[in-house]
Image 1 (cartoon, protein in one colour):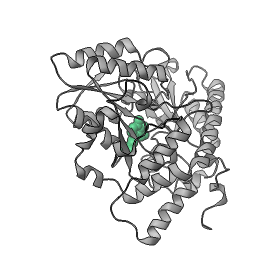
Image 2 (cartoon, helix red, strand yellow):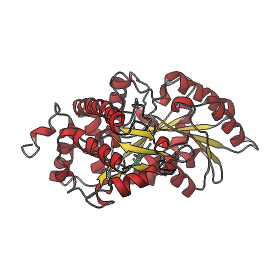
Image 3 (cartoon, rainbow, N blue to C red):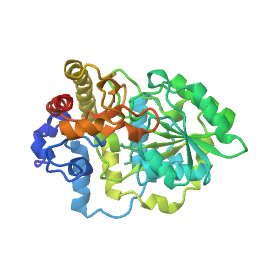
Length: 392
Ligand SMILES: Cc1ncc(COP(=O)(O)O)c(C=O)c1O
């Protein structure tokens, strides 16, 4: 593996490895949506080189010409071991998993297994914008149950939404985002158990999008939804995609609780043909051998969360920001800046910094912007300076 730069070794902070010039040679969405004078801190791609075990798995597969269809359960086995080590959860049963093309297509498939066209799916807004697009496309009716104080799940609001959703005997589901995008909220075991109890009471099926699970701040432990008491009929989607920056290497896993095994067994076989075999190999290597790299990333993200707080305090003190406990995203309350509903538009036009507009995240998003922290401290600093310049 002589071709892999030393900076990509497990000890280095992966967020400090690449220069802006190197990143601008990338051809992915983050780097090709805006002109070259714009700093992109929007879509959830990270400015990191790949973990060495991932590069090795992919290059070895290419050298073998091993580019056929996916087979076997190695991805699920690697995730089960990762879950045991990181989250102390030994309940991930490989026989109750299925490979799916990616998390969002997996979400849609899980909702097709548990609800029908026109049925309600409850979401906690503000939330990841594609939830609205994918569910709309799947002909599901979205009902918003806004997060409560501190961006935490509001059980009373959720109960009202569940009660209305099943009125008239219709099936309904709850699409839980855990950790939550964009606020970075990491739900506690008690909160998740309360969700499970509520779902059981109203017969609402829980589908948990746990794509950000590996990305938590130091001292924070992610709690898998299926690990809490009462969650037996739940379904979850997990992936190495966010933790190791593998969105372009398509693969994800659907997991079923014991009482959802029969539902998952009805997943059409062709769904499992969608993931990329090379993607499955990459994700498996990340989970199995990418722990040191992930730890270095998480330490770098801790630093960036603190740095962002310092930069905002200095340059944009009226922006309200609380360092998140999970994800590499920062949810900025910019309502004090007087930039209207879409402050990201001003940051882009006048500051040449691309953030995600809060209005895309549903109710509660107006006046906010989402910033992607998975970049170098230098880019983060330049971005906040650009945002401040937009006000001048
Ligand atoms: C909460 C959440 N779900 C799903 C996705 C997309 O995952 P995938 O590319 O595997 O569909 C993202 C991407 O940022 C996300 O933040």
